[in-house]
Amino acid sequence: MAEIAASPPDWSHVHFDVHCARCGEDLFGRAEAVCPTCDLAFDWDEAVPLEALRCGTCDYPLYRLTQERCPECGEAFAWDDVVTNYRQRDKRVFEYRWREQPVRSWWASWRAAVRPETFWTRAKLYDPTPVGALVGLVISTTVLSIALTSCFMLLCYCVFAAVSDAWSFYLRFSVATVSRIVFESTWRLGALETVALASMMLYRQSMQRGRLRNGHIVRIWAYSVGLLVPVYVFVGQMVLFAAGFVGRQFALPNLWSSTLAQAVPVALFGVCAVHVAWSVRCGFGDYLKMPHAWGVAIATVVMTCLATVMVFVLHVWF
View (cartoon, rainbow, N blue to C red):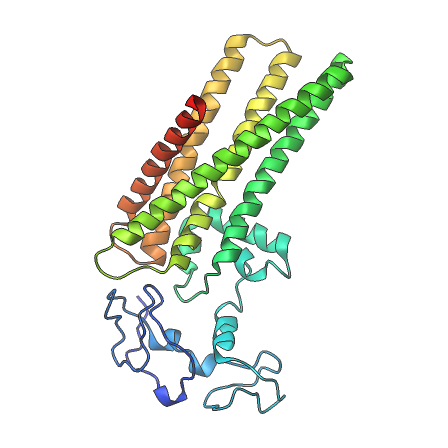
């Protein structure tokens, strides 16, 4: 374990707010490197990176400055913005780079979500957690999954039409079918993701000591549920539709098609549940350093599954 700096900074040179990275407790002026609210032990050099702060224009060190203007280039700055830029300087994920590199940053975020243990071990509690960008990451992933599913189905229908020479029939049938699937996938994925976030927030409210920041919960939700579940749904629908296409094209027995239609969703659901649970466990355990991380992960998955099933049943009934 890395050695934790116990010496507090010279508070006369600190011109920005200093809070606990986990619960948000005000730490300005304190001497102990332990949060009095949530008992998080931290490093003063990481909590107050005075000597690492530099001008964003000319890279001039800003340590010991009293005015919010760089003496080298004359650029005005805000201390909070300087600290935020420092903490996200080397991060290439979507929530920090969505304006400059939307596609590349989305791909970096998805790759990080696929390997939760590596991502959550390297993630820092002091990293900024822009809630709006994280929600946008989930929405963009969901929309992309539904769009790719629709394109794949339309492609299969075009192949059907070309093989059977029935363009008029398949055009009407494909538009109606794809429209229905897009509608159902949208509200079902939306319901599942919303329930998952609500279950994590429920754990946050049930804590007896301290409170987690909302941004941390949203970040774990985005990388554990929002980036993984839509991809599994896309793969499952693609496999099922492809299996139906192959079965019709090559006149395979109905038993083969029905068996595959039952086995694929069950297998993908199991893999997806384990993957999400493992990511939530790493998020709460390795990132937030909270106890009972496995319990939170299992409870989140179970509550999400049960609540989502109830929503689906109520939708069918009413």
